[in-house]
Length: 148
Image (cartoon, rainbow, N blue to C red):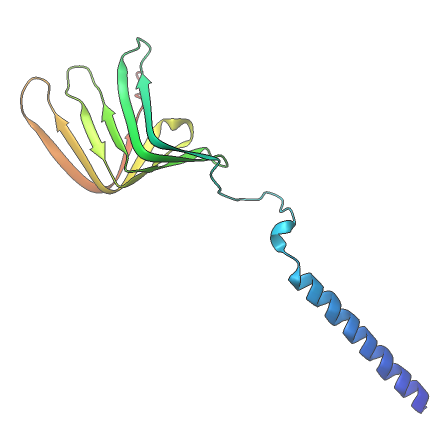
């Protein structure tokens, strides 16, 4: 009977050592090396320093100019991060509207920009000196009008 007890203890010990080694190797394996289905990484694919984009209407007339110290594009959701953006918007019969902020996000497709942090909008009128300055922490700007 003692031989069977010793054999059971040795077999149990061998199984425990084997399981411990198997678990340890599984924990040490780098999880990033395994592909994850639907990986939701948000890594940029490119960036542009001193970025400028100009939007024109169907007649070729300027509608807006978007400038930033840096633009970083993210391919997974087609958005872009802007550092120190400056947007100039043009409307017929009005002086250009200038919008500034610390940072901004360009929506997929580039139709909207969300300005954040120390947003300042300076607006004037083409016919007189009247105008104004608006400040806020967030501002969404539609770059393309529904009518053109």
